[in-house]
Image (cartoon, rainbow over all chains, first blue to last red; front, side, top):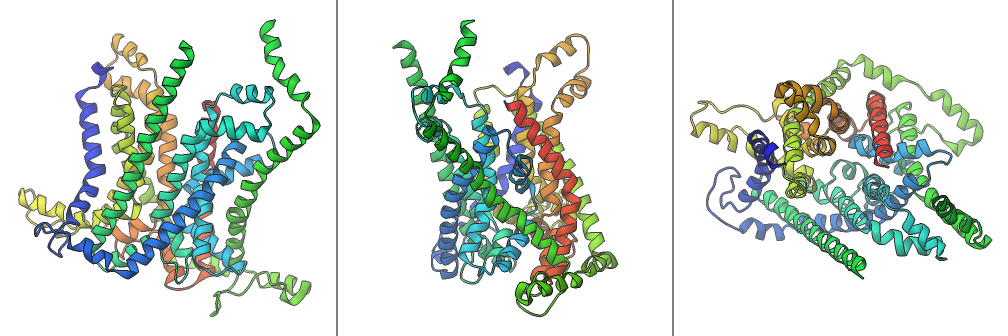
Length: 272
Length: 322
């Protein structure tokens, strides 16, 4: 395969990745800028990080965002996994077309529409806008992403394992928790992380569905960005990127370990 | 014969299971479907119906700022009287003001151009990844996905510092002597194109990569052995075979880009006319909920066909996955 990996291929990959990463790298570099001018280098400094931690509004917003993210990602993972099972296992039930439509449509639905429609629902049922409404909104749009991730794993799942367990007398629920769940667990974990970062990231839907006292970090950043680019926002963004990057790296290492362990087990089983 | 017997065995045992476990299984099955189904019905479908209803009602200076469409407080007769108040005034208003029509058309054009640009930028990357040695492919894939995990808002924000008149791009270009005057990029449509291509690139690369990776490259080699030039081998074999990926990638970029708000707002400045931004302004600045609902309904209608295409592509991919 090496022979076909031409110079053109390598160049396009290098340029593509430079395009993807350079803006983020520059953003991080300029968060350590001494000067208040974001684009002129005035020496190394961490003072923006210090002032960040004294910014009470930003800290409150971070706390709200973290709570919304954890709660909504967890509920969305449960619902999304159920939806994925429904989509792959139950090919015939009334309203299946509508169901798959409702799972796939939110993936591409413009956020302004989702945000507006959810807000109008909350107003119609008389729910006060705040922490609860943002969380409900985030569950709804992130569960569909979880469903797609888990579904792609379930499609390749070898069902004879489940049949074997049931033949040996395991009830369906037990079969699910002892056989199915461990196999699709990596997909569920990455689904959770995807839901969490989508929630962490969302500005538009949160702006529609949030109320006083539940300002999320993206809303806070957005309102400050509109006033101008400052190194303090660069610092806030850098921390956010670092948190997500560490999470992704830990998850992928854990994933690789589990995969290697599985391969070792398989080899041992074959030998034994 | 033994094979058939083995295949038939699980089902005979399953039917021999006790009625109690079958009952439990049926209940669990139903619950698995019902819970996500109800959730999506209530939080996804019902809200659209409400949006449609409110788009037919009138603006009122109150909280919420519209006259209620379905009001049961006056009893059943009041409820039916409410239907007479429904009207298409908001929609007539949208057709009368050229602003909205222009915003829809501009959004579609911008999304269309950006989608083509994203395809042009994304295809060589996906192709390079698919041709890469198998050992480094997972790493490359990870590198494409990683920016997707970092905040959309942050990635758009990062471009402000680059594209500003006194920004990094102009500094570099001025220093190298390529230009003598700073380029005005921020707050133009060019900045929006850059923003969309940048933010949506992973959505284009991933489906392209997955269809290019599955491709049998020996077909291209065979064509070349038979004397087909490299470029025409690409257009006759590689590109048609990657078409499912091209369609999926384009839809994943085009549909959300039409209703995009953050990119035109932060990079396009106040002059740009895109429908997502118009809806936002109607809602947050003018506080006109019925009109913004009408804008949303029409946007949804405009996107219905591409969304249906997308769902069909998804369903097809799912079938092939099996």
